[in-house]
Length: 364
Image 1 (cartoon, one colour):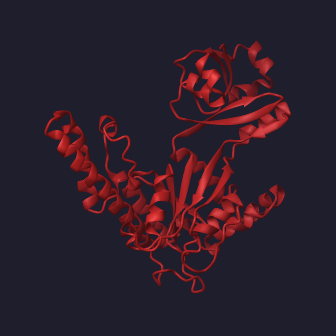
Image 2 (cartoon, helix red, strand yellow):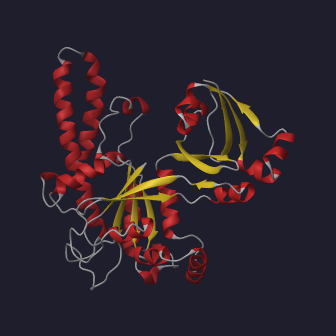
């Protein structure tokens, strides 16, 4: 799954990306430092894997991962090709969700592209460009659908949904702020509207604010109110502090976090929030060869989950032997759990749950 990190130039976007992935993306105090998107894979923090690794001492340890893409900054007029606009929009179209970094602190040493710090204005600049791009997509689709309407009354429902979305965008609302019923969503599965992608607004705070209530920051408060109004998430984070934490080993990191008065780094919270934002869960496999987390969408049934491991597992699916992670840990070993009758045999209709530890039985 891909998450695109976006934001105006010099809001801390590339600094945050570097901290997330340690990929060494260039970060500097001038616009358009990032031109081509940098890509980094990052592990999803999961303490359950650590416990299973202690239990099995496996040869291999494989966490779930998310792909983060650092997308070039943009300026007003991107939807019309200004700056790196067309490139920017095409890169966003490829991601599953957006982490929108907005600056919520003053610093005369860091030049803002618009000369002053105003996070709501920054959000509006990017959202407006996404909305304009979406309106062009909707206009083309509506023109096509209306031509079909002359000989096919079946497209009336689709036109109604398209007009509903267009009307909202025309007032400045993002498409994600428009509530659609499941049957309406089913009529437009291939639209891939930019402003309908799930988003987390990452409010980049100053180092001085770490450990304090972010709601004391008026800029953060304004961002959260706006995000709530469109059903988006807000995450307070300090990109500079996270970059420092990313350079530390495990013990140093724990000590540093303790000194700051926090227990979990902002990056770990952001990664977990991103995982949840995409509607993802993990099921686990464990044994002496490998302990591993597998990423699936919430609601996935057992055969399709088995197919994540290998297509043969799905094709020849017989059953899934499942135990909840908590039940396994309480039992101490898989053998003890089996003796207690805690391992369930589930069939093709079983919906996988987060933290299921599973063995798939198949025959091809």
